[in-house]
Image (cartoon, rainbow, N blue to C red; front, side, top):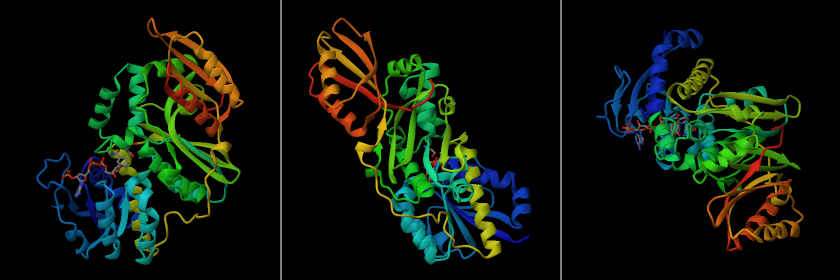
Length: 429
Ligand SMILES: NC(=O)C1=CN([C@@H]2O[C@H](COP(=O)(O)OP(=O)(O)OC[C@H]3O[C@@H](n4cnc5c(N)ncnc54)[C@H](OP(=O)(O)O)[C@@H]3O)[C@@H](O)[C@H]2O)C=CC1
Ligand SMILES: N[C@@H](CC=O)C(=O)O
């Protein structure tokens, strides 16, 4: 049987998983593609590192030129991370005619369009199924199964690390730092987890989902992004008492033909399927004008689930090579898009405050709210100590600009500080 020789950049969590899956499932893959997949070379940072994967038959190097200049290598899998170095390597590999598969959402969210053009020019495939929601095959599903529908909204839990941390805090009373450490040990977190906890990783994934679902390009600056670093256990518990789970949620939706994308902690009614998504699992809800609401659920991070998505890309490229159809874009959908203005994006909110010298303070907040025609749904006050109370209020629907005005007004009050202001997803608790 003819071989397809593959190069791999990175032998960490995902790279090791790719090698294991190719070894374990070779017979099935050969049966489907008519080719034997051979990992020929790997590029790493430290070639002397002990690895928990069988590397027999693979030449390990630190020099990208060993892959670029090897005429036998047809496909290169980039699972090393970074933006600028990965971009430089991939550009050189594409110019050398190698097909590229990457799990790197940072790179695709920032430079995806440019790389897709270069891939076109060189008649190469550029696929990145693993870059969004790890093991859930969401990108190819949107491309193929939603091709005829008009997508109205895509929302989901698209970061495994933060969902793992929130689950551990809520169910096992584990501290934020301890939960983050376990997520790192289990291979869910990025090499530097800052982007995970700050919501940036989820925002990158929402950029890619927005391109696939709406054909529109947005950038990080278009996305209001809030992380989970400041979430307090008291708010997680308070939300639960009110019938909600707090999850880091990405939401992309069309409002009057304009796109609104946000990432942040959101209160989800406990009866909603998204509220039941635990640990490193992800879920993406795609709402189409014709099909209605659909949900895709599965592991959003981790060695083998992510490797499975990479393998689905490898198989797609291999089939294209066999059929001589390489060079078509992963996502062909593209249209002009403008971002929705803050006046037009409405949600109810959960606002948690620390209030000193209580008498009279609530009146000041009521005044701020009534000045902009906003109203409370409920107010709960709990004692923190002799001087301070935690006041939690939920609002009726307010626009993002009204919310800004409320928070801005409160920030001018000496006695009150804002602990949290999170969207509430409408629905039955
Ligand atoms: N982990 C996960 O669950 C998921 C990860 N991803 C994405 O997949 C990619 C890889 O993630 P993951 O496997 O977790 O990362 P790891 O940190 O576990 O592994 C990174 C690998 O890349 C190598 N590497 C890093 N920088 C360089 C460099 N400059 N030159 C050569 N080699 C380099 C490292 O070498 P060495 O081992 O020698 O240090 C290591 O083998 C990232 O883009 C990530 O965002 C996507 C979905 C899920
Ligand atoms: N760090 C990411 C890995 C997958 O994309 C996450 O936690 O989701």
